[in-house]
Image 1 (spheres, one colour):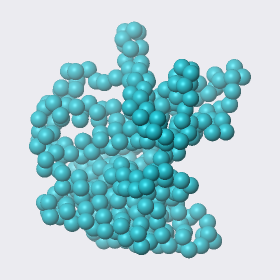
Image 2 (cartoon, helix red, strand yellow):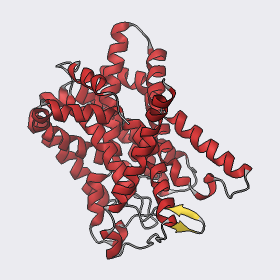
Image 3 (tube, one colour):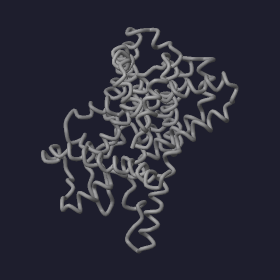
Image 4 (cartoon, one colour):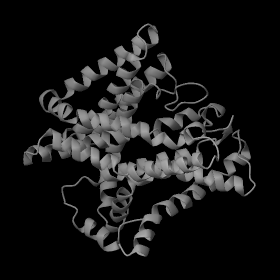
Length: 374
């Protein structure tokens, strides 16, 4: 499931003093939040022969406020912006060029997808060959939830050489231009359907580029140099914008889809851009205390280990959930369709159960290598 202890300790020992360990911590925490959300905060059940995963936000007054913290996709992107700018700066120093930079980043991103897709393809072909039922594309589209993030993030990587150069040349003006484009796309989408899906696609793309661009300001030191005052200003500006957009504007309060509403994520709206600023400000406010904790070996070792598993966990966590759903049904239990008191009380089970399945899935390749002597 994890790297050998000596390998892990070697990585810990090799950590340069200049590394911003909070970036790695936020990447690991974001993965944990996404996984825990999908496992425990989804009313996973069968509907018309399909596995569906609505959430209980619309059923509990005020629960939408939790999404202003727990919708962590913006964190992925501004942390990615930090990492990609660091990689681009290294590529420029080494003279490796944009094509090689993009290729190496895409390989790192998509490599964990290969065994995951291969396993599901083999499973589906076996089921179809045996006449055993419908394709996973019909009953289990939730399995493929990780693909949307990886697809969008791949596009952001492709744009990174351009956005990094724009940041170096124009800095804050790039954010202003992207923000204007986001608002214009939203206005066009909300005002008329004549333009078709194009405003939604353009607006969504600009939002994720904007979130990614925020990470450049963390990486270049300008946000950190401003200390707590600048961090607080960023958080306050993001919160003010988010409040204005959702209270006075036409946007949903929830940052995730719920109760038939898109929740600002499908398509992605200006609210997610504001949320990114709010969350980045909070992270930077907490950064000094987090740095002190991560200077100790044990917490940093845990973060290094978690980041080594981040993408495999992300790719396989929905598969683990489906596996536990199958085991749950085989044991004679029925899935709840409403957020009743019993459903809430069962949430620890839906964290522990899929976690055990995921641990078994991730441990299987290591066990196979030991048995085959590789």
